[in-house]
Structure formats: structure tokens, C-alpha cells
Image (cartoon, rainbow, N blue to C red; front, side):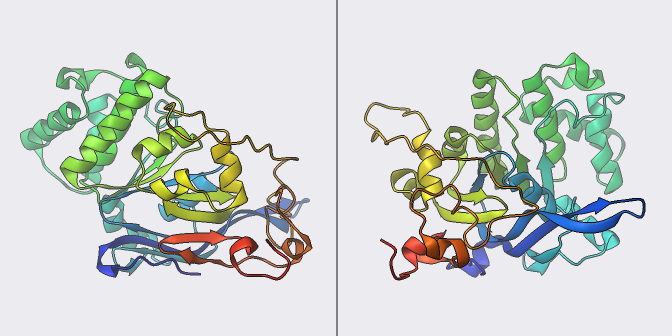
Length: 336
């Protein structure tokens, strides 16, 4: 199902029924015997200037979704509509101009940087590919980028191994910012950093968003981090979107049983916050190459009934701007 916000002219990214399957091959001839359904038909939309958080347990498919939207992975099915253009079927040569508008900050700030290049060379590379700035003007622009992310421009001749983890992630952010993009996809951008450094990087990203009118797709498993930076949040499980709500609504009153379980594990950040009853999910996450029939969450859901085992719940709007895939809200008989 398509999830479209009220003011279509404000939508920067709309994802419709996006799927990404990885083939399982076996034997001498490498025949395909199945698929790992990393992303299995998710839909959501992101407005210009907002931060959309994408959360879920490890292995739920959120990073695969981000890389598929970026076209680092080729989508198996579905549409990726960016600024009014469906980029899901564009050839590589046609994608080049969109690469300027969609950039990514990766989880590991060390492996995402070329250890053989200086910081200046790393920041220069995207400018060279797209033919932006030249000579002294380019050097001045690189120095300005480093200042924007809190790095001393004199460090431009240093190599990545000479920086701390937080400084390396600032370099990654500067590289993403170099082409003045409209959308930045952050794939767990602070999970590898110390807690004190995490807050610094998050505050930097928020400041840059205000200054450059950026839009973020922020992927993370830490619900505390997501709460700090996001405007709206999507909850994924086993390649499927379970719920999409505003930050305020999701943290105050999560609708889907999976969202309720995730939020019950988040420590209260203030004594005035409502104390949640801890919900312990039983069993392990099913194999994405052989997901359960019906609702993929029914094998661990404390509220599941027989209907959930055979019928896939529709992902739909149940309250204003609140979308959920659960039979609890579909008016199915026998479900309370």
C-alpha cells in the first residue's frame, strides 16, 4: 500500500511496496533455490526538511532498505520516488545527477573512509566526479566543509587513522555534505561511537539540518537515539513495516505489539515519564528466507490468534497520520 502524506508537494521521498530479495544459490551451477527477503514490500514517505527514523532489531532489513533506496542495492520490486521522479528503474548513467541529491553516512566511520587518502583528497573526490569547483576555490570549499563539521582545516593533510572515531564520522558527514544534497541517509551513523560522542554528532547533524535544510532518513536500533533526532518513525520487523507514527504518538502510545515490546525495553529518560510494563518477546526472529505465513510477527506476538497465522494484515492508516499493519486495528472478527 502507498503511504502518502497530506501535502504531496512537501514529499521528498516516497517508497511504495519496496522489495529487496537476495538469491540463495547452491551447487556447482549455482542454481537459485530460494531468496532472503531482506525487504519485503515496505511503504512510507518523507517530507522535505524532516527526519524519518527507521528502527527495528538487528536483521530486520532497515539497512538493506536504506541501501536499496540509495540504489547501492538494486530493488527487486517497488518504486522509489525521489522529488517526483521514480529512480527505481533508472540506469546507472541516469542516476549520476541523483547521486548529488542523495548521500549516505555509514555506520563504521573507519572502513567507510579510504585509508590511503588524506581527508582533503576524500572530500575532493565527490567534487571532482561531479565537476564542482576548481583550483583554489575547491580548496577553500573543502576548508569550509571541515569547519562546518567541527574539524580544523589544517587537518586536511592527515589520514583517517590519525583521527578518533567521532572525528572520522565528522569526516563522513562532511563528505556527504560536500555535494549539497537534499537527502542524507544515515545508516546507524552513531552506533559505533561512545555515548558522549554520539550526542555531539547528533547535535551536529541537527544543526546542519537547520542550516542547509536537509532531510534525513535515520536508521538505528537504539530507540533513545531515534527519539532524540526524529520527527516521525517507522518500525520494521523481518523486512516488513509494522508501524509509522509521529515521534510523539509512537512514544506515548505505540499501536503495534512489536512497537510496544521495543519501547518497553527503553529506560525512562526522566522520572516524569510513564513507566512501561516490560514485554519479553519469546523465541527468535524467524529466518528471512522462510518467513512465517500471515503476519510475520505472529510467532512472537503475545496477542496473536489463529487469524494472524494465515492472513497478512493490511498496512493502512488507522488514525490520522498513523499507519499500522495489525489485525487488532482492521476490525477482524475474534480479535480484541
